[in-house]
Length: 174
Image 1 (tube, rainbow, N blue to C red):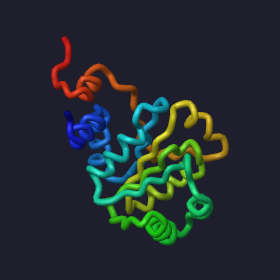
Image 2: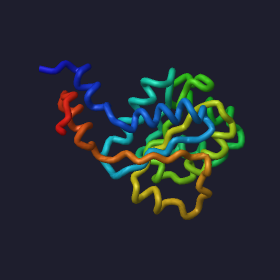
Image 3: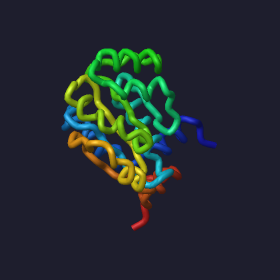
Image 4: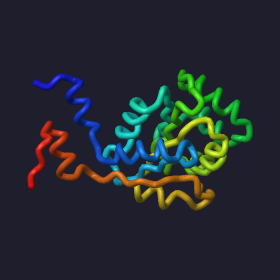
């Protein structure tokens, strides 16, 4: 029988993790990371695991289930001090400059937040990771300016090697 720590580590082992780590180390907050992919391939799970492992703190904003209070913060981001203090109060998380990440999960559901990335990146205090489904993220950009400050990566379903990792095998067939 497997204990929870073994299950936990198997679920999250994905090849894209190393690319995400390279983005964090090389870009140093100069771009947001957009993880896109088909529905149900593990984007949100991978990103949250990455945030837990690679940052001192993080805030995850799930745009598939967002409060009016959070939406209103994106209506006027001119005062970023207020924006960040409000997020920290709402989520009960203390953000640390250049050591924290803010995750915009299911960003296709609230394109105005994606547009805000340009200003958030320019501010430089935190890293940003966005997730979105492939079809919806292309469709929901009509009335926004797509930020050029994004590094885009695609998460695919498990390949054979990742499948073997998930079942606890380091040996892959030849």
